[in-house]
Image (cartoon, rainbow, N blue to C red; front, side, top):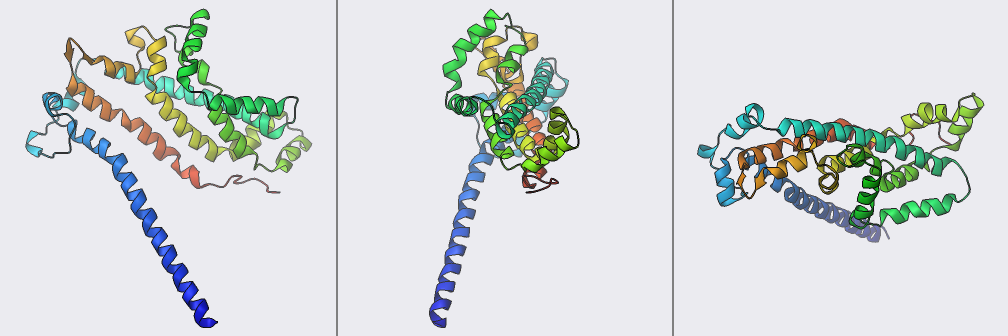
Length: 289
C-alpha cells in the first residue's frame, strides 16, 4: 500500500513538472513571437529610411549604420506628428473615461437591480458583442451624417461609450459583489448615486484597470472609424497621420518608423500604471457575505 502510494505520488510529481515545463515553453514561444516585431521596429528606427524601403523590416544588427537622425527628425523636424499625437492622446483619454463611466453604470444596473425586460436587454448586449464592427459601420456612418457630427471628435467617442464587452465584463465582475454592501449604504441614508460612487467604484478598481488598458489600446490604435468620419488634416489621429506619410508622390520612412515606435510608449505606460490592480481581490476592502 505504502509503495503504491509512493509510486502514485512520484508519478503525479513528474506529471506536474512536465506540465509546468510545457507551459514555460509555450509562453516563452508566445513571448518571442510578440516581442520580435517590436524588436524589429526598434532596430529599424535607428536605420536610414532608404534601407527600410530597400530591405524592409529585418532583425539584422549593424551598429555602423545606426544613427539618431530619425529621432532628431521626430523631435526637432518640421512636421505634424505631435499634432496627431496630441489628438490621439486627448481622444484616448476622453474615450476611456467616458466608456468606463457609462459602461460601469449600465453594468451596475444589470448586476444590482431587478427590472422589467432585464434578461432580454442583457441578451441584446451579448448579441451586440457578436456583431463585427464592419457590419454596423455604414449604418453608423449614416447616423453620424444625419446628426451633423462628421469631422467632429464626438463622432469618434459617442458610438462607443456604452461598450458591449466592457458592460459584460463589469456585470460579471459585480455579480460577486456582496449585496449587504448596498443594503448597508441604504440604511446609512446614502443615495443610489452615493452608493455607486462611494462604495461600488472603489471595489471596481481592478476591473477599471483591466478595461482601461483594453479600451485605451483600442482607442489609441483605432484607424477605420476615424478614417471615415474625420476630414480635416489638423484633426487627424496618430494612426491617420502616420498613414499619410506614405503616398504615391513620396514617402517619409524616417519619420514613419521612429514615430511608429514612439507611439508604442503611451500604451506601455498605461499598462505599467495599472498592472498592479490585476492581482487585487474581487471585493478588496469590502465586507464579504
